[in-house]
Each structure stands twice: as C-alpha cells, then as structure tokens.
Image (cartoon, rainbow, N blue to C red; front, side, top):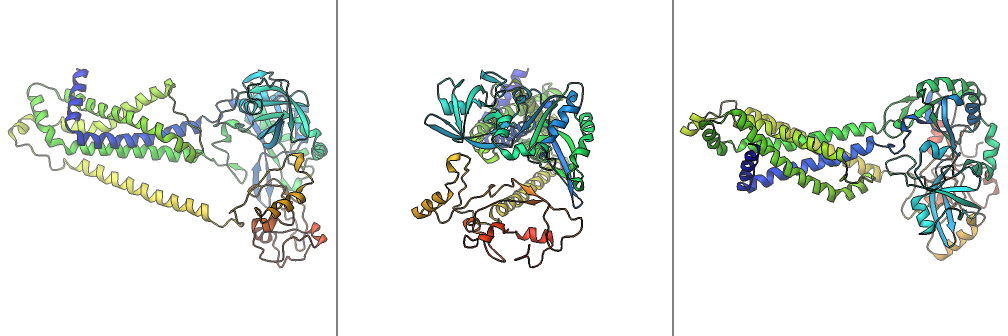
Length: 577
C-alpha cells in the first residue's frame, strides 16, 4: 500500500511540474536555512566537547568592586597558586598556572614562523587530555622543553621527526621538542594554543614574574583547575573563599572574591554584569533557533497554501476514490505520502545547497563547520526532521482534501463551505506577518552592522599596520627601523606601544590627582608608547599637545582620553600632576 502511495505521489508531482518546482524549491530553501542554523547551533552547544574532563575543568575567576560597580574576570595574583596548593589541594586533581595566550617566533634552521601558545605548568597536558601523536605527555617537565601542535610541527620540520630537535624561540633561547599533540579543533578553547612551554621558563626569563611571587595585588596571571571526582564547583568555590583575607591584604578596598568558572560555561555563558553571571552567546543560540523554526514554518505554510489552492483539481480524484470504497484514513495516508515525497526531495536539494554554501557561511560566521556526512546521529535527526516537516506541511491539506463528499463532487455541485477558506487566510496572514517581521529585523541588523563598521573609533585605521615584535632581534633597533622605513617612502610615521591598539593588556590603580574624592577607586587602562604614537594613529588632540622628542620632561607626561578626564572629574587638566 505504501508503495502505491509513493507511485501516485510521484505521478502527481511529475504531471504538475510547475507546481512541483515551486513547492519543492520553497521547501528546499527553507530547510536549507534551517539546516545551516541547526549545524551552527550544534557547533555552539558542542564547544569544548573535545576535552574529556570538560565537566570538571574550570578557570579561577575574580570579582572586584570599584566605586560600587563589580567587575569580573580571569586575572589572578601569582601567590594564589601557593595558597591553594598548600591548603586546598585535596579538592583538585590538577592545578595549572598559565600565561596569557601570546605570539612567539619559532625558528628551526632557515624556517621561521610566528605561532600563538601558552607557558603552562606540567599538569596542563594531563588536565586537557591532549592527544599525543609523538613524544611524551609529560612534555613540559623540563625547563627547556616545548610541545608543538601537529600543524606547527609540520610547518617547522616538514617530514622530519621533530622529537629531540631544537627550536629557537624569539632568537632568545633554545627549546627541545619533547612532544607533538593533535591540533585542538576550532570550536574549542585553547584551539589557538599551537605550542606549550614550561611555566618555569616563563618565570625564569621575566624578572617581573619572579618579583610577583608574593604580590597579591598584581593580577597578571591566569589559573586553570580540574576538580576532584568527589566534589563540585560550588563546594570548592565555597572553600577557597577563605583565601579572601590574604587576597585582600593589599587591596581591601576592592573586596575581591574568588570563584571557579566551569569550562562548560566559558563559551555560552561567559558574560558578567556587576558580579553576576548573566548569560552570553546562549541568547544567540535561542534567537537563531527561533529564527530557524519560523523559516521552516513559513516554508510549510507555503506548501499548505499551494496544496489547498489546488483542491478543485483534486476533488474528482477524491470523489472517485471514495466512491469505490476508499476510507478517509487511506486518503489521508496518500496525501501525507505525497507530502513525504515532496519533503524528501526538498531535503536532498537542501543538503546540496548547504554543502555549496557552507564555506561562505563559515567565513561569515567565523566558524569551521564540516558537513557531518559520517554522523549517524545527524542522519537519524535528519530523518526525524523530514518526517516532522512532512507531517507539519501535509497535515492540513490531507485533512482538508480527504473531507470532500463524493456525491457532491461527482455531481459537480461541490462547493466549499462558508468558512472553508478561513484557515488558508489565517496561514497567509501569518506568513506575511512573519515575513515582514524578518525583513524589518534584517534591515535593523544591517543598519547596526553598518554603524558598527563605520562609527568613529578615535583613530585612523586606514593604512595602519601592527607588527608584533616579540623577538630579541627587534630590541634596541626601533630608531634604526623607523628611520629606514620613513626614508623608504613606504611609511609616513612609525611608533611603538606596550599593547595592541585594539586590546587592553594592563590596568593600573593608585593614581593621585588634585581634587580626587576621598575613597575614590580607579582602575585605568594603561599603555606605554613612543612619542610618535598619536601621530601614527592620527589621534585627535583636543587639548594640549602630543608627546615630543624635543621635551625630555615628556618622559613623565601622560595623555588622557576624554573618557578618563570625565571619569576622574578633571577640569582643565593640562599641566597638572
């Protein structure tokens, strides 16, 4: 019987090619959009699934209060490690101090590349359960060892075995390759960790880090932990709150508090407001999920309307089939079978559309989503998706067409009831309402995007190039480089900075100025620059003047932006200390 339903469905579709193209095409486009959104949502929800211990890994976060407003972030002081190891290690399987992700120049023979990675303690590979392809998992136990991801090892060594080879880092020190690990997939934290070097090396080559060993007020580090099997993030957080007294020894006014921020929340629920977790990207998952559902609904409504609009052409067919004994349930099954064939064809076309559009979508969404050809779960979900869509799109036409009375149809006296067109009118109104809402939403979003792209940013980004200078080869050679570049005519101006233009790498407090209110707390972003910085970025100086090489006293000068002046409550700040 089912085979006959499919044959009849196929004959009807083949006979009415124009109707079929419109119906299948409309459904295919709607399903393609829904599929792409579904793949994006799955990618978002599966973030960090690569890590075996995802449900036990957390980062230590800290909240501090400034002038009644609480800020939250991952920056912690170095002495915290010692305090946790000495008194609370029973709650942790692993505790790992880490640098911030940083770019380094790696050189082997004549090959020199720039890669990003971390200095981490030796427990990091175990905590992250890295897939070691060559070498040993405990690859950063020695101070001069380095672990490379597969792509970095390939770029440096080609087909050579990298284990035991020496890599020069920043033309400063030699590191021996002890392990090669599998590249961490794109939709995971640490995916840009292309090398791991020992934390002890980081400490040994930076005097300021050595000095920070007892500085509770120096929040320049980050810490990752894996909690024990018999505990929870909440219980461990409650225990480490006891460290608060030591943490606040040098910063009592900030009322600092520590807590564990689980890895499972890093990506989707990483937003904090006034010390409270308030969500994050999860709202976009819900938003796009709703959009996908409405797009599919529009496609199904279009199918329903087209099917019911052809009711007169199918009326005689229904009348004859009923007159020779067909039950209404059989007719419903037939029409649902036709709906299934249409939806199945639409799904196959939608798959082709998605495959062709996926590269462009990845570029737009900054993703690395592959079509899950080999995923049994995907195809099982797709089958359910097809059946659900077929039922949703075909239910109303099936019920409507199967309700015709055979006597009236065959006599030619069949007329639709007074309110028979009401459901279709409701569907059309709903379809146009949702469509108009989508159009308005799209226009608003495009306006916001254009505003964000073209809004004033305080400097001229046209022709501006930023070059990281981590290598020792650059140190002490800025003046020479600047003279050479400007003399070449290719560069108008050149300057140095302790942080990128688009990032904040350092905050400072403890400033004193005339008129500072009693008890006023400040935490200002701070960047050290050369005298040419403002000119290089074409910053607009609204009061006073830029730094100048002609004034040696400028070594003790500071430039404030308008926000800082307003925040500090300064009036006529030029020349004041």
